[in-house]
Length: 147
Image (cartoon, rainbow, N blue to C red; front, side, top):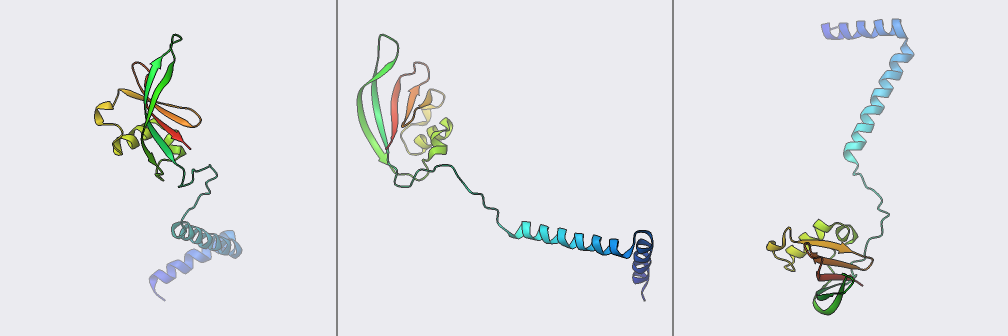
């Protein structure tokens, strides 16, 4: 018997005398279970169930240039609308439309806005429309209709 085996046996015997053989086997079993759980956590991909309503890929988003006139009450009403494009982009979903920064980034990436608009525009969203407005006046100049 080697020196390492002798020490291991001595440690096991001391543990058994102090806590009992059954305890050592329980600890060993628990360690094996912990190793199995760690292995399964590493090897199993984690999937989450998404319960939020996601727009279908065939949802049409109509993008319009808007000419608005200010009323006597101070609110803006549309004078004229010109369609500048329609998209069924899968990236343009509810989570992007709810985040104004992502909306502006998408519009800049798809050449509806240029980089000079940074800091000068804001996003206003309603049920089926997302408006891009000038920050200083609140005048809408671009709208996205969700159909």
